[in-house]
Image (cartoon, rainbow over all chains, first blue to last red; front, side, top):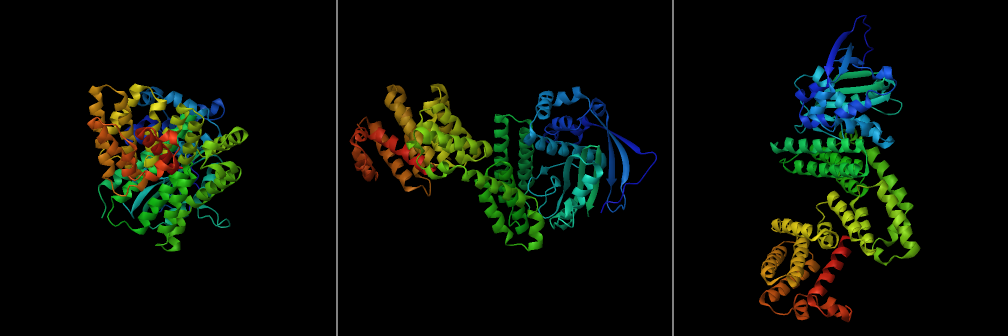
Amino acid sequence: MSGPATTLHVMRVVDHPLERLYADQDFDWVVDTVPAVLAWVPAGARKRRRRPLRFTLHHQPASAPVSERLLLRLDWDLAQLEARDRALTERTARMRAGRTAQREHVTELAAYGLALVGISLLLPGRRVVSMRKGLPPDLLFDVTPGALRGVEVAGRSRGGLAALNALRLGSAAADDLGKQGVLRERRDIVEAHLSLWCASPRVFVIAKVKP
Amino acid sequence: MTSEQYPLGVGEAGKLKLRATALLAEGGEARVFEGLALLHDAARAEARALQVLEHPSAEVRLASAVEQCACFVEGRAPTLAARAWGQVLDTARALPENAVGPMLARLEPRYLRLVADFVGALRKAPRLARTSASVEFLQGRELRRYLRELETLRSRFPGTPGLWWSTCRLEQAQGRPRAAWAAIQRAVRLDPDNVHYAAVRLLLMPRALPTKQVEALLVETYAGIQRAPPEVCLVFALHEMARARRGTPATRATRLERALEAVIQGRSRQGTPPEVSQSLHAAQLLVTEQRKGHEATLDLLYRAGLGEAVVSSPAGKRVDAFRFLSQHVTQALTRHAA
């Protein structure tokens, strides 16, 4: 279970340039998620689009009773990103202009992209090798049958830490185990992390939930 | 035992899913369709990956079935998702309930929602369900209503190959070969393993494409004739025979040779349906006569077992043995795919 975020007067600051993902992960996992990150995160008023984007990051490593609170500053060099994906600007524009049905996919894709940021920062050296649609975890580091390792991902437009905790822990009243409960119950998963993001307010939770 | 190929297989499937999600997020009719098609590809890649494992556990088989079904659910293909759901239920029987529950927690509500949507949409499309086997006979107001129902259903479930196949038949019946071609292309893209779609695609090609493209596609088909299903071999042979009849003596021999190779390949396949087998036999007899420079007669069709079809056809159709066989094959393939 997630403990309350510790109150610190000075938060440790971590910087992450988005283009670093191309060094940390295979090209295919990055190129399709970056436009969604650009389309999804900088929503709202001009002030909210100012870069670097600041996220409150709640990091809970294995067996830590409480999470550490950090300040994540996410930035990017558009020229460097465009050097990897020449259609980046058009793709981002198309994702921004999308209708409701499309927006769900943008949120999903952006959450994958931001999960890659979380992996770069807090699980260095881990590389995504596959992804799943039908059962958690979404992003896999290791697909060994019966001994899966990976990250379960979710993104929310609003609701902040409370919305992310509800996703994580579910609700006993609604017979919902939450993402953490499902991952812990699954016998074929040996290592699982959660990567949960909220766009407004900007909150990021990354937690190791198994073992 | 874990094969080294398994991680590559599920890795490929994963990348297809991510690419599909990106296309769906970008929107636009063509991109969305390609995104749905990639999800179908991903489901097939998951199935192939499972096949390389020796004795996979029930849990691994269930995980693969769940993933395949989820791809079809997200790929807006309720009929294919239903087929995969059957596999999910069947595999789940081998596992205790407390293991199955968490594995179906995400898929089950999504699958049930898709099916409920599809059933609801079908209820509002009574003509589609009632007349799907005889669209060629629809006219006037009934035709327009059928079209409207089909378009509505297709816009909601564009990943369903059968809906593109119905569109193809309807367009063909209305004398719009290019639209029919575009529809069959989409049916084939979604379900490339369906041999009837592949054969009908080959059948429609000359009516929709310029000669150069037709020739290029015939060359491509011939290059893969040793692995082609018998239906494709048959249609390829008929195309070459038709072109041999119209072509110069110099090209005639080559075309008839290719036609003969195709029918021999087609006849060598196991489990060929009897009507396809008879037509292949008839094509072989016709092409053999053509190669000798003889006139092909109806007797050859009788010898191949098509006598019943010959006597029950109108007299006008029985004038030319080759044209009779072509029309017979067209009808048989269209009926079968329906």
